[in-house]
Length: 409
Length: 230
Image (cartoon, rainbow over all chains, first blue to last red; front, side, top):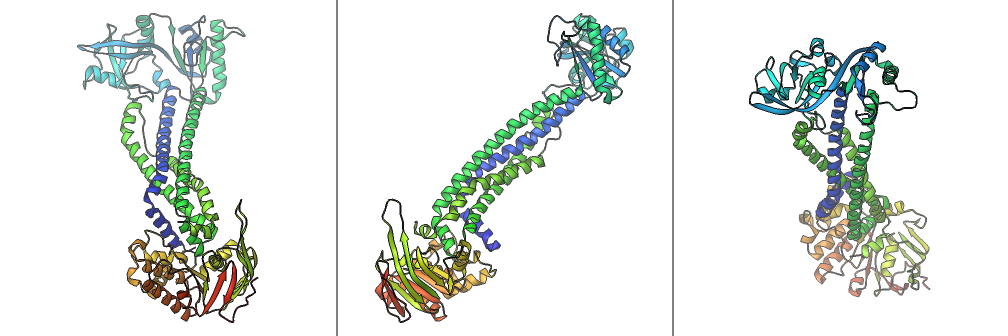
């Protein structure tokens, strides 16, 4: 087969029947667009979630929740986690190098002069920067004295600081939390928006002892994060912490725990499972789109072969064998698929860059862009779709009896 | 060149009695002949052309093309012979629509190993006197011109046999005259020409006339036949 002429012939056939080529390619355009867009954005969502989880649950931190549920709470009849439990764990497990006690007060009214807003208020301790890797950007973080003296001091998230103080530095000023005065010690480092769309810079941190005594009036905490020196001992230390907690709460064999020890690996596995399920659905939906595209290609090429039967008969008469006639149909489908791929990928690219800033602002998706892997997946699927869709019509074309074919008008 | 020995062709259609389109036809055409095969419609002359052109296989009997038995050849080899040895001209031209005259003429070269397609199609169009129409679409040409393009397509690969099935059937007498002259010119250059027609006047242009009726050869005006039809 003469390649130069063959390429011209395929191009000629497609331009002669433009409407058919466009119809055949539309499904592929949509499938590639959807696949490349969803996989590209999905990859960024995954990476953003991974970073978010890594910040909440660093790989050298074991989190203990008050209550048996993985996410805290749940169950009744058990005891909540008290500070004496935390002290017992610290005393019994020397591998713990730092701990961060959290007592969350939820959303509270905060006021400065005539400005007021509702902000998520959390109690924390002096070692939080070591454990949570978030310290004061300006001013100072809480210290042990603030915690033990139950000082009414606060750190503001950058967004909260902006709302209450504008461009002025809030350090040293007084804010009113539930009408109680707090001195601002510092402004937290900015971390941005969580993948759930929450502004994590809109927060106020006060000593956990203040949350317990003044805001909640309780004698327990919601969560403690223990940072350990050697991550390879994670499992043994986790077991040890659980044992101390059981002893503290008088839980003997067979009775369920009234607390939850969360290992970073548990969270990662949970995330991986969730994303795995999501990915399966995405792949199934994209697969369904490509299946429909293949059927469209099949229908279009079937009509094409039927309408061009005399032409295909003529090709056989002038020397084409079955494989060359088959190849003509397959190449036409492949060219349609290729063009569909390019258009679909370009549309996906435009789409990602058009909605990118919106997604970045709303969900903190950083580094949103087209994933080459997604493009490769889209291209391979589209080419396979074209070939599979055109296979039957091509086979039929190859098997045409030239005498019968030439007789058809 | 062309040698048919007791060739029969029977068509079987489901639910219908078998049709004997060719009944033990024996015919020999030597290189360089200009033969007209004449018969009424339904006489089997088109079937004969399809068999000679390797578009159809005989049900029985033997067909030798250039001394080579064709019954054992596979699809690929038959396609190769159709490409190199045979040129077809059809009553209804069979030009590709929305395709230029030159591109139509180049069609057989697509399935050959030749690379000089531009020069070849140019030469073939010049031979049929249509060099100035090379960029015209088929729909922009008259019937006579379309058939000339079809002849240029048939000769572009320099075949040794030209098979024409009612090539003037759709043309007026002036255009038909021009087409016949082209076949004669090709024959003078040594190409074997087989003309299938029901038109007696046209048949008289050939040096040899084979008459076919009900699938058998009725008469053959030339001594080169080995007529033994039943």
